[in-house]
Amino acid sequence: MATVDYRREINEAMQAGQEALRCLSQARDCLNSAGNWGIVDMLGGGLITTFIKRSKMKDADLLVQQARSALKRFQKELTDVENIPEFRIETGDFLTFADYFFDGLVADWLVQSKINDARRQVENAMVKINYIMGQLKGL
Image (cartoon, rainbow, N blue to C red; front, side, top):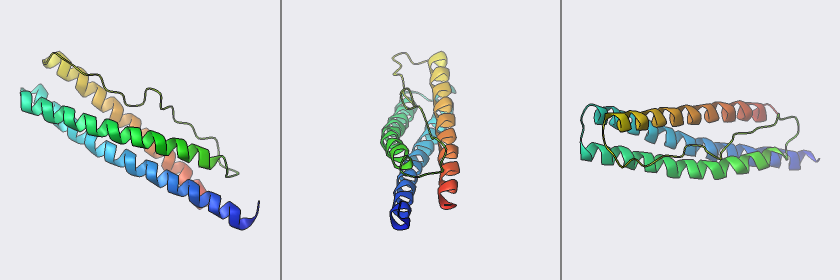
């Protein structure tokens, strides 16, 4: 592959990785906010607190959907670059949120647990992307 074409492929992969990181970073911020509201909700925050928390969760879910697309593009672009280990992040059940109709401590705790799991998934994905991006910069 010509040097110019190879450099272009690397740049395209880097752009796709940056887009995925941007979406995941924004999703993480929404999840952090949802988690904070979730704590208030567990302490008796009421309907407004529940509404704000769920709104933040919806925002995070939309950002994760955007990140899924960016991750697929990133994976596709990486196939054009040699000497990069295979990169896979499963996106099938990645950050899906259940809707709870009963408000109470148990439901709030379950939602809080889901928020924390989603935040960990986002952070793990960001670590993997940053690792690959570091390898791309070294090429």
